Image: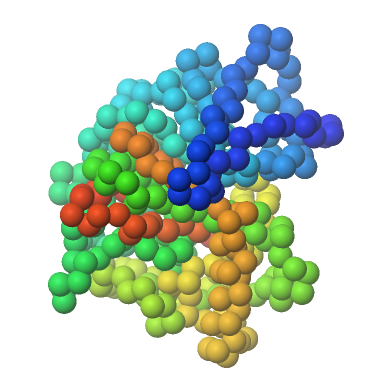
Length: 336
């Protein structure tokens, strides 16, 4: 397919504004009548990554959420069967923008399951203690859970990617907001493809071709996960080797693939060297220039790409207020 020079595109940059900073109105785009018969064209080299010109369904509103990551979709009801054109366009937006939020949804656990199945096969999550009884493939995240010692458990704190110790980690995770605190509780993302592109040459050379060992709970991590239930202990893979740089199977982009909570060794390095390299990569990748911070709204259905992102939850809210979300994952493939 021929490549043409990238157009100049003006975007709204408001995803990483400091608290209290007024937000600019986001840019919305729809297809224009004179573009309807244009062939599918891909622009390479744009500041936002790959942008695809294609008809937007007339009822669908699409809003970019940052320069490089995130898109909001409105005008779609995930509680009803999706038209194939809508499903294809949303799948395309998800791959291009890595984070997709569908606004104003009303879903029960079974509705969340049906919604995510529009985009792939469900990945069976590792710890069944968080499964929703009426729909076990759906799990919940709640700030009301506690460790056995009584200390509050804040799920998702600390940058990570989900279930990376699996041979074929989930390609995507979706959350649906049930109850939210009045302020705070954002989910932050670090775009690891953007971070890889911006690596200093020496550091890029150092990690290219290296592999890291992923386990359920790394002894190097300060964040402790809930222990596995007995029925899962033998089924959860331990000691899986994955490349430190993986190639996205749909975009072809390379991205840093790391998980500070689950990596316990980088091949060929001593423990102190492993820790130092992970720290250097994390410090680089979590710079604000690679960040998208999602500020939750009631009814948000949020889905992100684990193949090119790190994410974390923020515990910066009143813990007397309930934060409760449904979670489900999609089957991925072996990183390479």
